[in-house]
Image: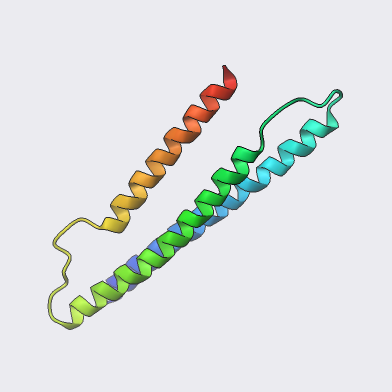
Length: 116
């Protein structure tokens, strides 16, 4: 039971980190916008993608929290019934890994496009 709680807390830390990183990414767009306005003449640029990507990271963190809660309830229920029900890989872990890999690819493509 304690291992299930530690796992839940680990997922919650991951969700909080995603939401914090999303906030930083979204607010970085404000920094870039102010920096562009301080230049003479103002340099063109697109800050909207940072806000969008940051918001998506925050929403991903929220989804991790919800999924972690449901996963924890399922594990605890399984432990109380005598079987852990953990005979397959974690959908939460695999889903998060896939989502973060896709997000990383999207950011890398965006950075390559901006540097060309």
